[in-house]
Image (cartoon, rainbow, N blue to C red):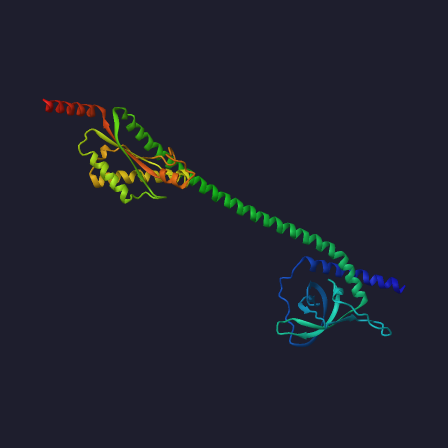
Length: 338
């Protein structure tokens, strides 16, 4: 009969504390914890949260307090039978939902350092039942939280990757537009050059020189200037001539950059002839940079690449004028022979 009454009393308590334990396992109180007063104190309550070095105790008023458990903390049974020795326990027995009594002293940090913890065997059995119910729920909740965290992390990573891809796409699109503009300018210059060159069948080459350039440079050296000075003097007594200027580069660097570099080299030569020798712009065939095209040596050696960093300058004279000049010269020579 006593056993039946005992179970009738314990069963509702199990339900009550199981519910309390599950709520404590799944919810985190937004209320700040109660600060333990300095000095020795005793308090009762239920374990609602565990930590590595203690637990959180919630009293009957709903206030929570941090309890620190040390090696000196005595954990034992609060027995009802005075004729037997009280059982001793370890911190592992401080389960969620366990109703207990704590005696200790408060610290300046507001924590209660436990000196003695007591609970009955009935309360321990109830806590063990609660733990058997709560632990699987905690595991499922923890797994759900982990899955949610993983999904949030993956979402953030994917969002970052999408942002990077959009930025990379924007950069690529901008570079493509720039490359298209560069190609359009090159095609336009090439078309203009072709138009001028198409008329070169009426001209023939009388002088040609090669101007060398150093690595990644479009500046004229002293020797290059002297060569151009000599070429300019060749035009003093010539009429009906054109000057063709072609720029080239070695294989160092990418194609687009080499095309621009060779163009700058050709334009440097043209500018020097115009500014230092007053050669009319109408005498100049539109200078063009051919980049790595038409190498005169192998780019596999440094000597070969040096030879390919060049500008070719040619003086083209109208065939009809040149023929007339030659005939006039022959006539003067014949007259002098009489």
